[in-house]
Amino acid sequence: MTRTVMAVLGVLLALYVVFGLVLPALFGLLKFVLVLAVVALAVVAVVTVVSRLSK
Image (tube, rainbow, N blue to C red; front, side, top):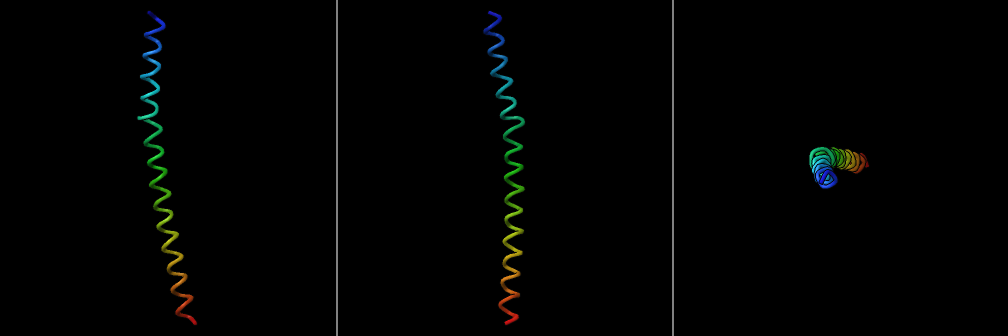
């Protein structure tokens, strides 16, 4: 009986860790990378436009 209760508590704790800590961290990292990619795209676009206008 104790083994079953501990297994259920372990599963609940694992689900809490995955859905409470890991997934929000991954989504936060994904948002950071997306913002970084947009900034990099803007920099590349500005450099390209400036280099074409200077010729």
